[in-house]
Image 1 (spheres, one colour):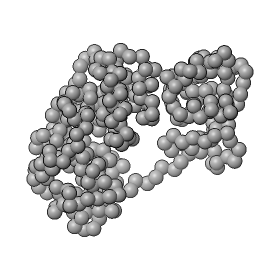
Image 2: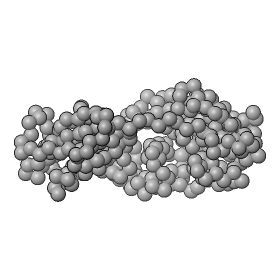
Image 3: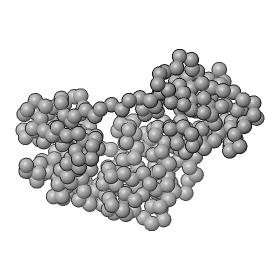
Image 4: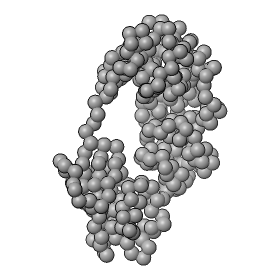
Length: 323
C-alpha cells in the first residue's frame, strides 16, 4: 500500500472541499475540544447553534471552569448524554489550572478524554502525528482498503488505528484527520456513497470488488434491556424530593426521584410512561407520596429542576404527575 500517496491525495482533496465550520476558524484547543465532545452522538448541523451558544456563555476554558455545574448543564440542555457536559466541566478545571497538554497521551489522563478525543485535539490543535478513529474514519478506511474487520473488537480496532496513525505519520496530521472525517461525513457516508467525488476512487478496494455496501461490517446489536422504574414523586411547597442516583443503571450519579427499579424479561402491560436511554427500555410506574421517607433526599425548586438534571426523563415523569 502506498500510504504516503494516499495521504497526499487526501490532503489535497480536504483543502479544496472542507466545509467552513466555526471550530475550524483557528487552532484554539478549547474550541476544538468543545466541538469534538459535542459532535459525539450528534450531527454537525445540530451542533453548530449549541457550539456558538456555549462559547458565548463560556468564551474561554477559564470561564467554563469557574461556572457552576447547573449553568453548564443548562447550556448543554438539548444535546443529551449529559455525562459529556459533566466531564467537560471537570476537565476544564484541570485545564484552567495547568493549561492544555500538547500530546494525546497526556490529554488521555483528563476526565472525558477518550482515545479519539485526545488524538483529535492533539493532532488538530498541536500537530501531533497521531491518527484518529471514529465512525467516519472506520467506514472510510474499511472501504478504501477492503477490510472485513470486526472493528468493535480490540484486534480489528487496533489494525484500523495503525493505518490511521501511518497516514498521519507523514505530517499534516490536522489535515489528514479532518480529511478522513470530512470524507466520511460528506462523500463516503453510510447510505449514500458518492465515489466520483472521492480522492481515492480509482484505488478503492471495496469499489473494485463491489463491497461498498458490505463494509464496514455491521456490529451485532446490543439487546435492549427492559427496566421497570417506580419513581416516588413528592412535591411540597413548590419543591420536589430528589436523591443522588445510586440505584438505577441509567443517569448514574445524577439527581433523580427516589424509588425502586427492577429488570424484567417481558415488557409490562401496565405503566404510566415509557422512555429510552441507549439500550435501556424504561417503563415508568409512578408512586405519589405526601412525605419523603428517604433520608438522603434533597428538596429542589420545581422551576430549577432542569438546571439540576436536564434529562427529559424527569420532565416526562413530572408531566404525568401534573396531568
